Image 1 (cartoon, rainbow, N blue to C red):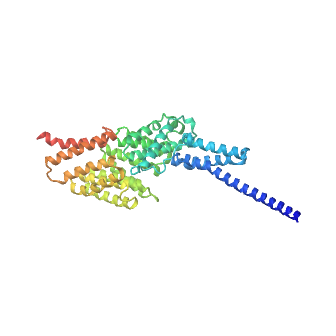
Image 2 (cartoon, one colour; image 1 turned 90 degrees about the vertical axis):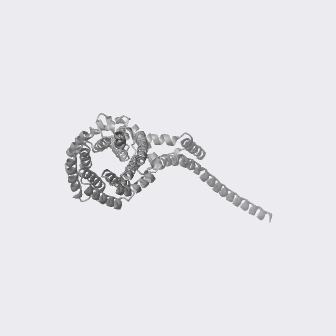
Length: 434
């Protein structure tokens, strides 16, 4: 009997040891799994410091594979050594800003893309800060030796610069665009030397550079555009749509030089060429139509120009939305034209909602908002058949405030500031004669 009890006890003890060993393995496996989660959690915290556009490139494609390798048996180290090394590495990414350094290294060898930043007029503050940071980085990349990049990377760098500059021009930050594009567009930059001035990417930089100078009223802009159009025609052919953006800028340069008949004929011919395309660029087409209607108003055909503007407003509203930046531009241009034509009452109806939308979407101090506020104030004065001295005094005070903001944001010689000064001179002239 005692022998049976001893045998049973041995069996129970053996089974107990098996259960204990199994439990020990389960517990150790649970502890190991939990401990291995720690470096991943630390790495996720470090990844929050990365720029949003680099999260996938750095965190998913670099850090996670590195961490998984350190925790795997391929390193040849024991489990505890692997765990300690993985946690130490993850902590270095978090505490020593290794993630930021990795992002900077990645930036330094591959230009950032400007996709999504083609139109910055109505960006949120967070997105605008991202654009400003990317633009600053583009400037830094342009100052690096061209030998640091291959030809494909240089072409993408130039394309990104062209997109950023065109966005700045449309946001009325033409001086910033000139600062960014001028080193490459001048032809003496190492990037221009590697790619050649007639490379498609460099043609884009040259166009945005000439566009910025045209908007600033620089006399050399037309010559730059003529050289650019000659090179584009030689590369793409005369009827290639890729030459049309430069051609419309050339027509606008003629209009700014006072050659309105030439400008209208060129814009009308270009509009017809684009309309015949199977898949026309509607954005470019609307820009051309707006320019042509403004030239018509300068030629004295204000009624036809106003009808044309209303047609473009309807088209852009259906294509882009009533509050899109391009639609607001067209509505503002119509209101401004009516002010210049002396029709203050109609201009008031058009410019009031435009000012409200621009204040809401672009801010009170944006150059577009200031221009609309200026012409709305002028429309109020024009709407009265005989404005008194008090109304003229209030308008002058309003224009002086606008002028100070324009000078601070864009410079004293910017065309918008010069236009405001001309209005102030016109308003004060009667007082001097009396």
